[in-house]
Amino acid sequence: DQQVKQNSPSLSVQEGRISILNCDYTNSMFDYFLWYKKYPAEGPTFLISISSIKDKNEDGRFTVFLNKSAKHLSLHIVPSQPGDSAVYFCAASDGHSGNTPLVFGKGTRLSVIA
Amino acid sequence: SQTIHQWPATLVQPVGSPLSLECTVEGTSNPNLYWYRQAAGRGLQLLFYSVGIGQISSEVPQNLSASRPQDRQFILSSKKLLLSDSGFYLCAWRDRDSYNEQFFGPGTRLTVL
Picture (spheres, rainbow over the protein chains, first blue to last red):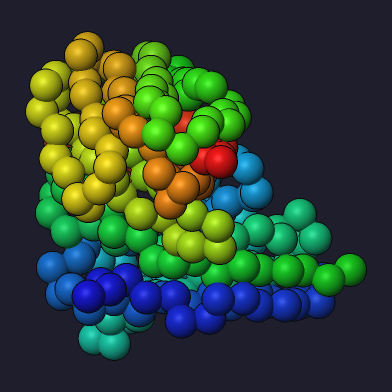
């Protein structure tokens, strides 16, 4: 049973426009959510996170929105740049410590077209 | 600052041969350590995690095993590789008992022929 779902395996966006990547979760105990970016043949790098006590967190061009009632979060990238082309993973954690492994979605491949 | 190392970066092994991938973390103590695999076109599959020396939790029954002989060293092993073991192996660490993000190593590309 997949607890974190990224239903869009791929997304193409024009440079300068907004990219919206979506993630749904089923476990109501999840209380911390993260987004990672991965280039081919490299390890994922942390992008942005949000705690369940917030509904929005912003860092530069990246904003994560959390809708707890819908068990849905999204990552907005504005404006999108060609260097943003990568696979984006959504991850979630249940518990207030680092001892519980993160649960990852299967990823969405973003292509930003110049 | 903390860094995480994995080696080798790439590896080509014949079916039936043994495997040993090593991961070390610097600049932190008592980290939680994780092994993931990304098969071609697939997501991140958690294989093992460890919350302390000698403590290993296995997430997926398979041909692999893990060991943590030292606080900041995590080893992924196999006695006999299968074709299906091919993939991109990632080590990661996270602060224990904290709400911080998880950090990944550069990965090892394993091809079993």
